[in-house]
Amino acid sequence: MAQGFDMNALFQQAQAIQEQMRRTQEELAKKEVTGTAGGGMVVVTATGTGEISRVQIDPSVVDPKDVGMLEDLVVAAANSALKAVQALAQSEGGPLANLKSMFPGMMP
Image 1: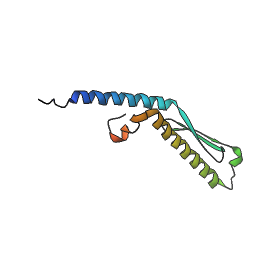
Image 2: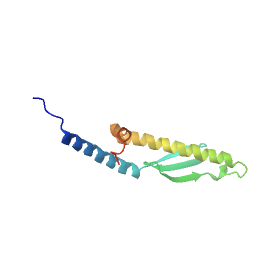
Image 3: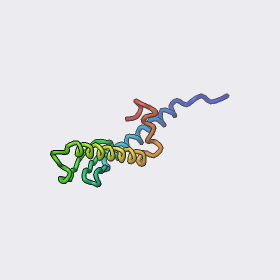
Image 4: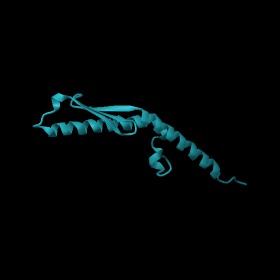
């Protein structure tokens, strides 16, 4: 006679994966990455969870007549930092990094 599907074992595996994801997210929150633009004239620092924590602007790029350039540099540096966050999450999360999108609502 064939054995039935062990729902309890599946639930335990799901809980273990959820716990591993929680620990990974806690570790990511402790790390920082940076993104730069304009050859380092604008530096944006973000946490591993994607929160922007600091923006540094070299005074030489602050030109009241060209605010648009400064805005563009800040956006470029922020996007660079957020890409670094994604890369960090992929490297830290390993094969679990994509599970959150596969199982919405199950992962913290």
